[in-house]
Image (cartoon, rainbow, N blue to C red; front, side, top):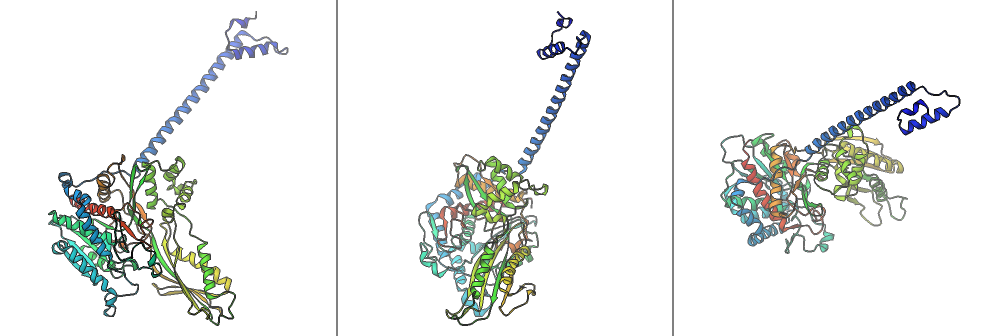
Length: 610
């Protein structure tokens, strides 16, 4: 037996030793040499193990720190907020019970809205309410004012009602506080409605100005946009008056009459008076129509309200084409109307790209849903939380979220500029070649874009067609009185792009201050206590982006807290026929709106810090 056999070795070392001994060119190992080799091996293994342990520990510690940091960031996203109930409600909720559950009150409210819908308050483009020669155009607004005064005598007797520019209504409920600390609360709506397309009247379930209703809905033009809001304000204020409420804080209702055509006579004058009377940044908050409906997600277990805290910009572009005329018996290969049809195809085949920046309220909306629900798979959920980190480069998260939104009609245009060719005029006679055609394109400018980018894109589209048909092209900015010639007019004719109404995207109202806390808390209160009381989860209120434009554009300097939200469980744009056929409002939603306004006014009044 060799001397080395007295040493107990691991099997793998025994194998190595055996190999050494059997190797005829290697001398028999020395015992001391084997011991040194063995202890050296153990030291190597130990050192390696220590390094691995330290590395894993450090990585684990780093991962824990990273996870804690990410969780802290997640906690900061979309705070749930508290349900806020007025003290008066906690002491006696009979008024809210009456609003939501009294059958006579429900019928009275329905009848009042029906009567309002029956008066066709259509504001006509280009008509001036102060021009005596056009007074007849505004007769229905006179009728509407008489109707409101007859239906709500207590409001007219108690509050100050002013008429501005003939048809704007500024209604002031003066606060009792002797201090100037408490800023007024402003509630907005508009009296006008969009016209009816004559060719579609027979497609309505009921005549568009009949105000018909059934057990669930009230139908008619303006029922959703936005006479339900007008009647909701008046009903809520009347109930507050009847209950003996006297606000410490001044509360104002401002009703425009030409919102659907820009608000240049109504909201502009109302805002100017409020600005002159109270000064800039003088309002606690401004509430107007807008937002999306209250949605049920998570298999119906979670209610999510989506008030708008910002809105897209907008611009209207008119494109005119003039060409030589002639007899239809010898037409050119492409008539004036045919060329414009080609232009329309070019424009519509070149949609605006999707963009989603970190300040877009749509991202806040998505992150709120991702945080509190299981609506999204893990990959999309992760992408939503990382989509705003575009300053670090797009890892693909931002692009994937845009792709997801692009597949949902109601959200697709929250991340891009729209282009809707809404009006076309051309031709005068079937046997005469058209010499003039005009189209009007309405754009809602994306939150990450500008009016200038919108114009530039459309002008490039027109350039493409102008080159193809050898036509001239000029761009006229009517507001600035400037004209730019791109291609000189040719014998074939000329395109002209006319830039009209333009509005840049609004700023975003904060969601981390007392004003939003009260607003959010009141919405949660009505949802949890009356609309969906049996849901297992607390309602979520997520600030969103308004895809359209409202009269709030004229009040932007009066408050940083501007909310667009009409309390509703029915999405008027998608399911409620707003601006389309069979416009309707849920009667339950009308009562919910009244209850919300009633409580919101009281909650704001109980806040006494500013």
